[in-house]
Image (cartoon, rainbow, N blue to C red; front, side, top):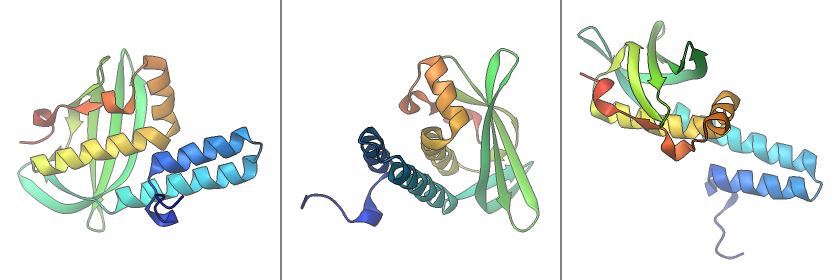
Length: 157
């Protein structure tokens, strides 16, 4: 036990594993609390990340992640991500997920730099662990969170 980090420093997967084990031992209420805490910690980490958005030729720095949706549109799976900057600026990025997990920009705003694209990749990795539509998509398609890869050049100019 001396190798375990303090409670606040544990990562999402550790919380989920503990929740699954508690659930297996019949402690469903406590397992649900731990699972909800893991989701809350993941969301707080995502909320602290800043993005630089590009609308036409104008750069909007320090945009915050607001929400991400995954849905099927025709034959393709689409990811719609919403960012907010300032008090009233809303930026949307739509992307297509291929069968092998590649994520390519499709419509909407772009990122101002490559650094923001890599932050976006990290957000997709985090959200795909706890958001139910991502979990269902990954189980149906046979992909893992690590298989979801952003094609960087399509997301910025």
